[in-house]
Length: 163
Image (cartoon, rainbow, N blue to C red; front, side, top):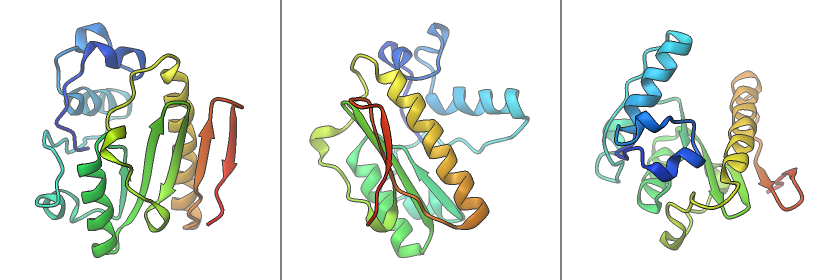
């Protein structure tokens, strides 16, 4: 788990944090929550992932799940995983839709769309996206199949993306 962000008040409407968590590092709260819930120790890194440190931070990975909200980190993940032949799935959101896309088909969004998870009803989309992404990862672990999806709130549909 890699993230340099701290929990802000606006995160409370889209992510599973408590008011008392505001100001804490997201990595710290997430790793603590996973340990309390599952007894799993996670190596949390309080850093911004860049092209310069991607190898150090991702080097031993077999699967990378990218949920960064900035194009610099997303680009670093995409490029490093492609070069190192590491499986990578990207999970991202925009106003009323989200996508779960494997590295081979992924295009890094414009920086204009960085960190846009601050709009009404975003929590519904976040939770639905997380559920679909979890299914994609579990299915990949079991079958090595790489499914790509788009999730839309407008018609509340989940559709396969055929590339």
